[in-house]
Length: 123
Image (cartoon, rainbow, N blue to C red; front, side, top):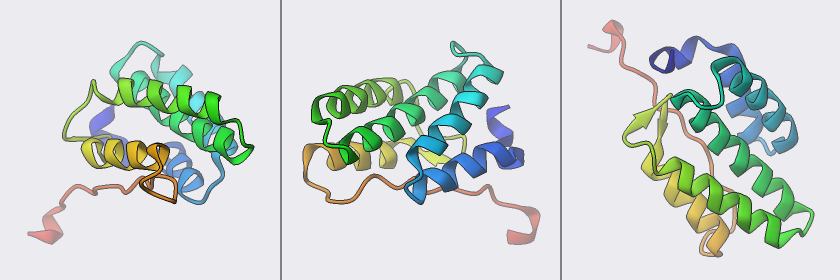
């Protein structure tokens, strides 16, 4: 369930791989989850956006600028289906970071920062 994202070791592992620049490995982890939840489910669509961002970063790394642009645009279009915090990700912040990363106004790739749910210990 998307509300229980923090219980998915594979999801968290994929985020870590992404944030440390292991985009191919991240893509593989997220693709496995994408197949598990179903590509047409909301979670599947979100995971596909993350897969596309990772693939776009990888394409840019190997100087394939046109495929990188195409993948980043597809990811941005897919991310528009979501708002607020989804599966622990501030979608608006990620969208802005991806856009800035691929339009040249940000030098580094977008970072996926997780927003952890509050627990009773935090109250």
